Length: 353
Image (tube, rainbow, N blue to C red; front, side, top):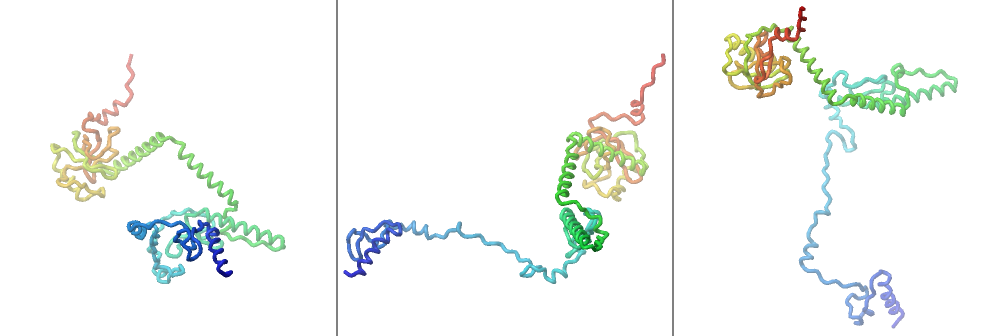
């Protein structure tokens, strides 16, 4: 054998050791020593797979496929993100959301105006930079930066012996505090507001809200009594049931056995036809026995005019309508007349010895 054959055999024996595989038991090419079938490569033989395993291995897999990205094309911009000319022409400031007076807070050295597309922006008067009208923190920070630049320019002018440039009038009222102090002031103000809100307990807040509602009812009652000339229909009390609620009052349907004069029923029909309160009762059928009852006319404490509540009341006529007053629940005893109640509340006279 030649030198080339010996070199090939040596390489065949060394290849399994270099690759980390188990050396083959087979000898040189063409020999049957060892009985292996892997040739010069060596390695472990595996049993052939069944048809079921092959089919399962070759079946398509969904878990490995990436999801398709949903792309949305912006028709108002070009490929490079620049706003198209047609979009600029179609942006009408009148179509933008209306701006309410004192909607945004005022800041010295800035002004509010409409920007591109009709949106409101806050412009710094000194250099014309625009900010979001709600972002006061960024606008103040920019104005602080401009103040530092003015101070540096004034210092340089002083060193050169030149006259310092006068700051614009609009920028003279700008804040000159540093940003760290500005953040501390903002946090302290937020903590103070939260402490004032949490100072009262829930019971105290409910008590204050109730007193405010009662005061508003009393003011509305006084206004109604001064504007409308109320006249009682009679001293009798009528029973009824609340059929609908509205803003500030409720619609009460009188009992079928309620006896009313013809002029009163005619006035009730005119009231439903003219709608002096801006709303009409939604109850179908005859509305000649449905009258309004204002919340401030309730005399029984704790009576809530919810739908289905049965009440007892007196009727009155005024310039606009017929309504119920001195309301109480149907099961409660009727309240004392106004004169009797005032006499009962008056102090008793002293006994003469």
